[in-house]
Image 1 (cartoon, rainbow, N blue to C red):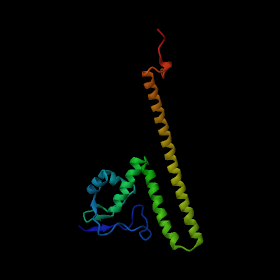
Image 2 (image 1 turned 180 degrees about the horizontal axis):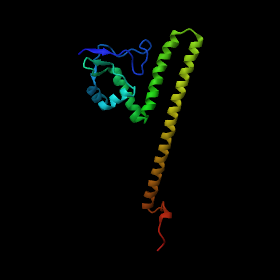
Image 3 (image 1 turned 60 degrees about the horizontal axis):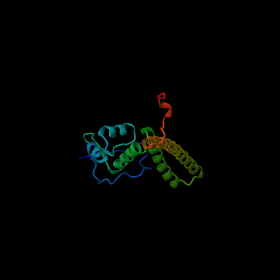
Image 4 (image 1 turned 45 degrees about the vertical axis):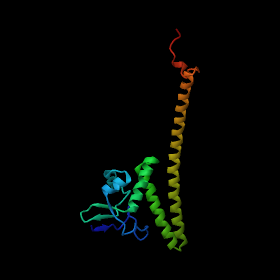
Length: 179
């Protein structure tokens, strides 16, 4: 099956400054195979492409999406951020873009000897890291709130268990008039 390799990775990065894609001899998978491999639906994979979170490694002559190992890795990462860490797709997109920019800036930094350009690259990277920290700290605060609420529910249930064992009523205000 002949394929056409894309000229830019997801996000439209410059191929000259982007990390190389997976081995050209590695098998390319069609969307159904990728879906089975990642546990995502083909519709989700297409949606991630529409959202520019992913760009297939190639297209077949029939215009079928073809994915390589780095695409599978990226999809698994997106799924983990979404399902396990609870990030929105917008947050995931920003994290992925910041990581891609960090990689591009690293290459530009290494190639440059101009202190002004190097400073600008460092400041850009620092701004992106600050944004990542803010996003992660906001997520951590929300998780801490959720943990505290769950602990409160557990304590309340423990009070009901204690009542069944002869302890005080956890809701004396709900008790009707004395008979």
